[in-house]
Length: 414
Image (tube, helix red, strand yellow):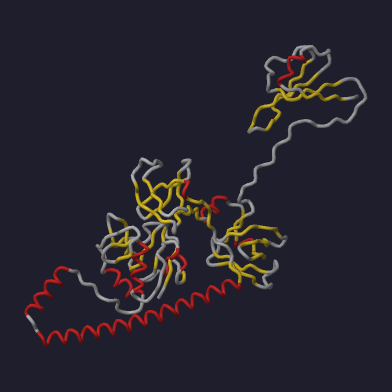
């Protein structure tokens, strides 16, 4: 028997109403997720199409008493499932790091490390429980038990969505409108953590003053992940951090020597003035001391000394772009100016401070550590407290807890 297959569309149904009296079968298709799926077989033998069959009709199979012949199957095929953007992404889930090896063997050479929550792209899967991955500059093998693959939610949670400011100064507003109030200002030196992308043309970001909105026209969006570090990169990083520790120690030593010299000079000057004991000079001195707040010079060369010195300026004003500890400073200007008194040169940028000194974990924070937030930076005082130039309303102040905002990095100088 020859089987003829005729595919009809909704537009030709009316032209098929007068077929010869041969059996036919009608397959009605339902629109499930855009893919035709046959839900019923309707069989009849009349010249009139079965009632109720409308534009949902997909295929009609005609059978006749003829020699059989192979026909092409024209039934709709199911669409391939959409592959997740992170289907091949591996995320390390370990206490510290997992070794990336040259071969799928625990005895092979270690090429680098993938730290906890670091990501890599899976290139292949071995039969003995290893993944070949590429992460950063490293390509090698990790044991499958130490990574999670294809978990979209996990990948998104370990990445940081970033809005990089691409203009000199950008206003952060309280809502998604240019008519809304200005929450604060951010400079082109900084990037901000994205918390909301729901409104077209606007991006919700985390700032020192809370969540605000910036125009998407003035930021560049990307997602930051932590990638593997090769053995050579690790060695270079550790050497750099050691050099920075030594430089900080040397700068602190010089600052201490300068302080002692200044104290000796002041003592000599005081002794000389004591021999003159003039009433007018005494009156003038008294007047000056009562009209100006006095500040102590840095004492010591460690993190606690930094905190002691910085704490003197609590209550002084916040000024965007400023760096004066007495007349007004912004957050990065405050940290920069405090550390400058200890002979340490730091950038006037909260995002740039994420790479100064060397990194420590939040569980290991010590007084004097620099805590970096989205668009903000502070000095850790200990006791879960920070001192920082907060905003124009509050000026320089203490805040607790230290993680009142999500902490991006902790950097140590001393």
